[in-house]
Length: 81
Length: 389
Image (cartoon, rainbow over all chains, first blue to last red):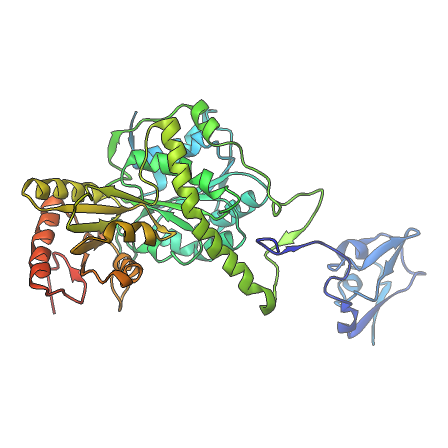
């Protein structure tokens, strides 16, 4: 044992937190202008940029809705699970 | 140089080549951090000075600095120290080497700025090692030693060096300030430990642990505190070899040979007790004095060894735990329980009330009667109290 507990960062060290979600953010890619503001604002780092598009990882998205609130073109809709 | 205790502390921090100073001003400590600001301003010291909005933040900044491998210094007193308390536990729990100066001052209310050891002694269970130098010279020497002890891998605990308001902090005396080269030889630059943060290999510590593990980390702190006793003695000896000054490690034994009675105390009025011992020895009394240099780790065995053939001990202290007794006497009595020695506890100099060698002679004379009559007061005696209920 170390004299203090060390915690190394890893994906999902607190298990899959996506099941906490009540509302699921759904991106409408026809409206999306790819400004990536949602990616910047996501407090959980659950939005990744894949092929120049924001993609939500629902295993870890807690459904806080910040992305939907910040989206300047209202391309993200919060849908009840 | 002719320095006050506070300036001696500032010189010590400079000689230790501290990298970060985070502090908030409070009487009677402010001169230390003012002097350090001056050293940085005129280029004598290459360190980052962080002006924080509170003592809580000062310690938090020192914790951050120590966590990434820097050598921090701060200083505080009284209310500021108590405000810092939460972070004191954090610093020790995170096992970070930090050195802090504490100029002991009474707690309010009623408001007071004068010396009293209750502030730092109330923090004795935090895991910090706590030293009580007797003079400005010892303040300087102890701060330099403290970095060496704190940064030792067998210790890795923060250290508070505590000295009396005004008696030491503002009194000037001749202080031998060692050369930078000698201090550099004695104190190498801060090491990197397994738990030193590293941006190339990121991790965090201080996170949640479950009941299955918490207890072990507490045991490690106690274990390190106990191992520090050996390190404190070794560092004192090494310091003596380079700088020619020794303070005896955990306790200083003053005229303890063939003593029948002993004073036990700590802090600034130790000098007056030594004067009283000299005068009582001249009158034929076989008296000695144990000066406690550190109350954490508590030097139980060191005291016990000296106390074996003693007829009685008088503990004098400038602190109190309400509803129990003097903190030093409570701790000493528990360490000496198996020896069954009569001990009289005196509370003196609370809130900076002046006590001198004449007072210690008086204390000895009335205690001497008690020892001979085998009539040992159970309760602590508040020396010089104006009103007694």
